[in-house]
Length: 74
Image 1: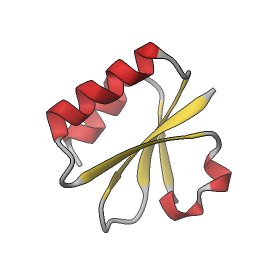
Image 2: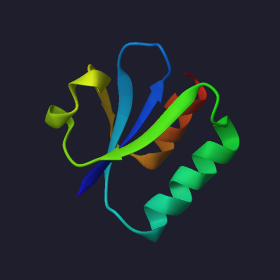
Image 3: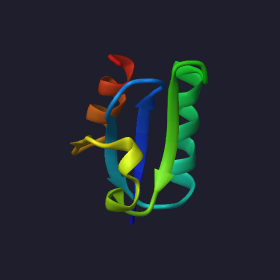
């Protein structure tokens, strides 16, 4: 288990999606980067949110679709 994090540079807080490592995650992350670019949003995969206080507060989303929509609205 891991978490995909989307954080807008210089903003407080982030979006988080609990997921699994593997090719599906890599493809999903590439899709998001292609849609959003590298300029304003950082995408990071972390093992546990409690170890990464710099991303707090976390807004946990339930599905990839919810996560993708929220990222597009950042």
